[in-house]
Image (cartoon, rainbow, N blue to C red; front, side, top):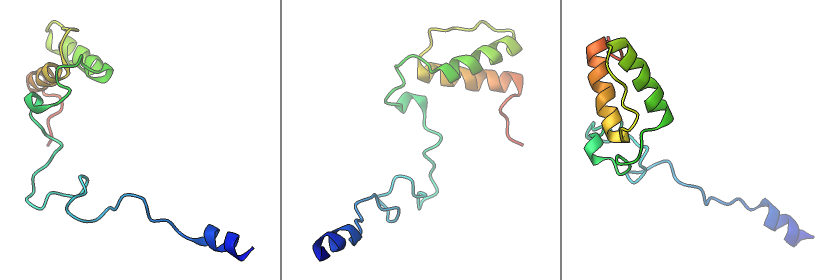
Length: 94
């Protein structure tokens, strides 16, 4: 019985570590952000836009009085969203 108890009470630390420079979620020590990446550098940029992108882009297109293009890729949709946000004033931080 002692063997079963000792095996059950051992703790395993096999989870990912949240410290150290190799953690991708750690802040960059040089102040660079990975939240704003050029759409041209996206590995999935050639895939069709997401549902969320399509929905927001449709709303922006209507507000700007521009045509909504449902055939855009993720990268192209992101660029178009930026353009229409500038045109409509949406998404600007104060």
